[in-house]
Length: 436
Ligand SMILES: *Cc1c(COP(=O)(O)O)cnc(C)c1O
Image 1 (spheres, helix red, strand yellow):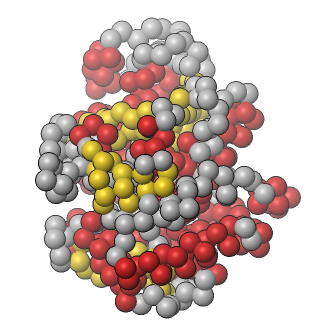
Image 2 (tube, protein in one colour):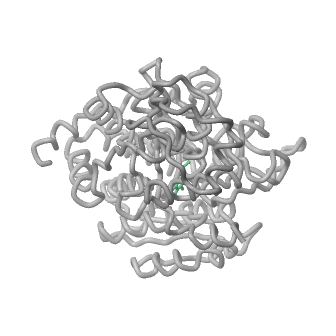
Image 3 (spheres, helix red, strand yellow):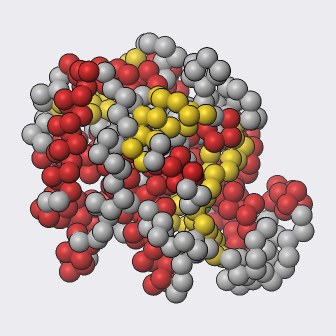
């Protein structure tokens, strides 16, 4: 591990593919912020660009990613899941109960002996149970480097709040998490976790009392306390430089995955599949393969229970371009430009905007986007649990469900890599309720 460190600190994750000077990826991104935020955003941009060029900063991040987060996370090849889809290293089909048989029937007959392979990048094994810690730790180190002693963040379901509270505990930073009152009620356990980690959790009563309102409050706090406070945003969203910075902190996923594919499988995957909420885990894994033109990159959005206003969060299926919370991108809005309510069984995918770099890569034809319904995600959750002994996060279960659909359609020797963005312990209660 130690002797690998300097090599990893030199990895080309920083400083490639920057947006333009105004923060645009093609027609998307930018900085749509009130006057009061212009100076703090400029200070942040300068602070970030300096930090990413600083070997000491990168070295400290690498050390913590290795010894604290537990990186590299493993690349694991499924056997029973691939076999269920008619492929796998053994090539043997495995019977797996009535529910799976029903899915298989819905997909059409599985062709026995097909060699489709399905591999999982195990971000669920990272400390705190998801990829979010990669970004939280990177930005918390940046906050400290910029001389900020207090961190504010928003959280929806609480996953980003927990990752941020964790990073702040580790680095001795004060931490204040804004969370909608409705979300606090639904995610009471995460509120307890954050408080145990030493964070203050502030209840947001405004608007729909969910994530969007929590972001507004966190930004307000930042403006009011900017001399000592850092705003730690949780996905590849918001005004420049956040989409760039979050992608660069998450790109460790794709960097590791590409090397692991070559080491363990001897080739690159044909397709990389990742779920897309704001888009950080997907940008993180896609980043490792963007320059490999032959590798298909597929983002999976939340199809909810129908592609109809208020019933899903598939921005590319029901959205159009607009501005939300600091960035121009694809958003779910009505004809008058009002943000539509969204729905997904997984809280982490339930947001009206997608990261701007995704919109740009889609325009360029480099990435593709599909959506998976609540029902199919639930099926993916149960299938992975039963066949591989892994409870995926409901977000990640969307990617699993799509990989299963894809495996039934593609050529025999196709290799599919799925980013398993997080573990599903947090979702057990929701799954039990949904199955009732
Ligand atoms: C938050 C979360 C997501 C969605 O966020 P992205 O920024 O799109 O990655 C996906 N999976 C898990 C496990 C999460 O916690």
